[in-house]
Image (cartoon, rainbow, N blue to C red):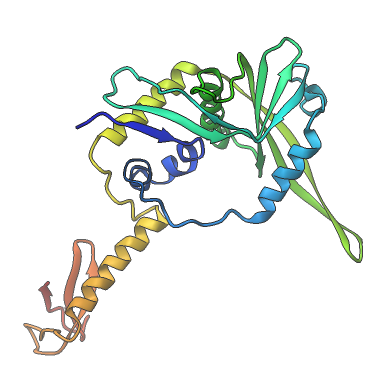
Length: 270
């Protein structure tokens, strides 16, 4: 095959890649994305309010235990130079937008991402890919793209709502726990992951994951519906009792089943 230069977004490397390899390859390689489902607006509002509130504040006051510094950059687009990965025929580059970056007192930088929900080891490991994507883009930017180097700290700021209060007839308040999670930087592990991603994209299209992907499940059901429409009005007779037959879907695909099932177990292939 002709070597490609795949565009990878930080979000696709987390939710989409973990959710369905078939849909991931369809979007990145063939430009066919899942139907857009807007993120509930409240999460975007929360993230925007957090960004505005934290802007120009001291990092160590927000995340105790993190190195001293000032939050300087919020919601900026980044793009990496082309990445050539060992053992991969094709290349890739990173393009996306980070939440906030702090300029530390030692002149290095810290990348932080806002998350609404309870923290967990599994979630943090997945979100780590987003942060490492921003490292690659900021330390090895494309021409004219934003460059911030070196990156010395990574973190996730989790907001977990746990208290609601009605302030007056027209105002309410939503409070919650804030927890800062330190993420270890591991460039070799992330580059190995990117090689895995590019090799997947260079290979054959992964099978539809109808067992865990709602979009693949929808596609499968729609295909079955199309088959039903094609054969409608041509229902055969049961080979055992001569009764009408109905279209059903089983482990090995669609087939004709006797309408008197389970009293009659006559079947026909399509």
